[in-house]
Amino acid sequence: MTQLKTAVVAAPEKILVLPFADGIGDFVNMQPLLAAIARRFPGADISVAASSYANYLNSPSNPVKIVTPSWFNKEPGPVAQTLRHFIPQSVLARLAGPLFKREMGGDVDLLVNTILLWEKNMDFPRYWTPQTPPRPGAVHTLDCLANALEEELDLVIPVEERYPHVEIRPDARAWADAYMLENDLQEGKVVALIPESNMLIKKWPAASWAYLNDKLQERGFQPLFFGPPKSEQLDAIEQKARRPVRRVATTLDKVAALLEQSSLAIGVDTGLLHIAAAVGTHWLGIFGPTNPDVTGPYDHRIGRGLVAPFPRGESCRTCWKSFKYEDDKCHSLELGACTDFLDRRSVLIAACDMLPVALPPQP
Image 1 (cartoon, rainbow, N blue to C red):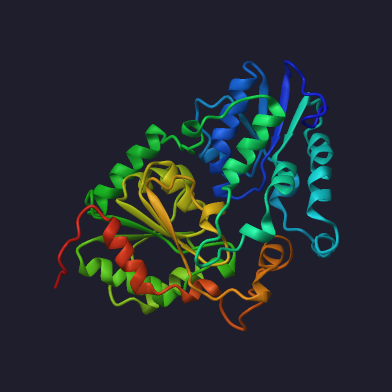
Image 2: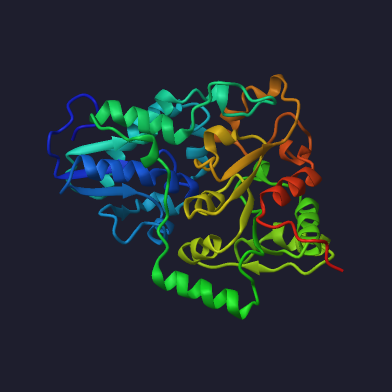
């Protein structure tokens, strides 16, 4: 098995790609990279390690297969969590290849380990946590990996081919059409709101989401909250909102189809915001501990990230490390996170500026 650079096989029959991370947004960002690898090695049997959710996002026309290692569906035990504090991530990245190969139980001619490429090429201490004003020189994760793959695999990924795209499946689009009709949702008025994240420090206060829900409805828009069926965040938003809160929970292929029909998607730094951008929907991101120029949706032609204007001091310098490897806590604040400092009125103003029509307030 070849693990990049040392001796790339001229015509590998079996290729295994390890994504740099296993989040929904991470898989969306992998799409143009997987397409480039498939073009570089036509006819190869290409697999990508990802959780089962990826089957809802992988294009039916994509020759890449999804394989899900058994441990992807398990929470790490206390020993594994403790070791993460002491073993460098670069070491874990190198160990990932042999572990994945063993799990697959078969020969792999070429291992494309983007976990290792990410750890080697991304300047996490300098660029992961955003600064206000922005620190120049940040490189998006997708560009970081695309540039590395160009060198490692002797290929070219032009800028125009780096934009992620999620293909809408016909049955999912039909479902979205029916959902819009049944719920009296009108084209041009739907605003997708994405408040959920698997990380607490990425979240924006429920009261701010409730404010956004109410003010958008006052202006004649139809906010639609996306999230899991059980969500404390969404429950809290419902309790604080003055106007009805409309919620939807469904599979990711249908989420993508519904996001495509939304005029704007507003969300924290999470996978569904990446899906929205990848189906061509304008997006507005709410960012605190993560940098929109590094981890946000790639397509800034149709969206922008708003960064909480929190004065990031000495304790924020290692936020990237605790965020990625250790815990889910802000070490600068006793309660909450820096995302809380993003003013809800500024988000509303930015949203109205991006919406196709600023409707007059409704009674």
